[in-house]
Amino acid sequence: MSKFSSGTSSARRNAEALLSKSQKRESSFKLEQAQEHEALMRKTARLRELRLAKEEEDKKLQEAAPAPVNRPGKPRRSRQT
Image (tube, rainbow, N blue to C red):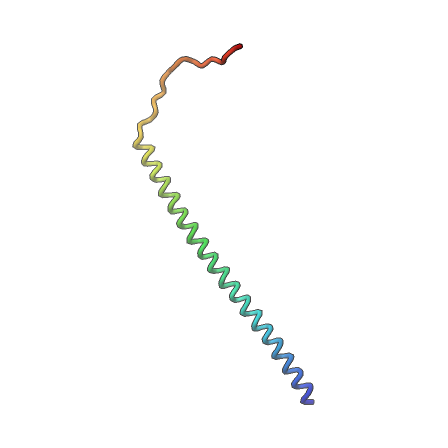
């Protein structure tokens, strides 16, 4: 009977070791995924800030620049051969 018991306990230890290894792999994957998500969110926020600053600067430059004057000129004619 002890032989059967030791075989069962050995199988149980192997199964628990595999389960533990799988759980560690899964938790490390989830941690890595969360870190990548955080990095992507920081990058997106930084790019958004840069874009908004550029748009604001462009708006200021456009307001400061004088409006282009349209000069009435000769109407353009197509060249006839």
